[in-house]
Length: 82
Image (cartoon, rainbow, N blue to C red; front, side, top):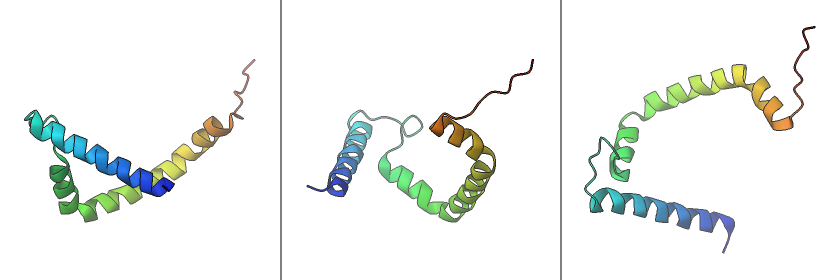
């Protein structure tokens, strides 16, 4: 079984468990919305979400890249102020 097949099956199991928990325990959507509620909410605001995703990615690339690359490589050195 391939890696992508296992990932797909894992995602199906996770969504199934999520749906079973929400419906089985009668959890109010305010605390834990079901997968169908989440999909409907995202699909209704797809254009807005894509627009804001672009803004977030641009800001992250501009401000977060130096710190992220330092954390990944471990090569950042603190300047000594003696």
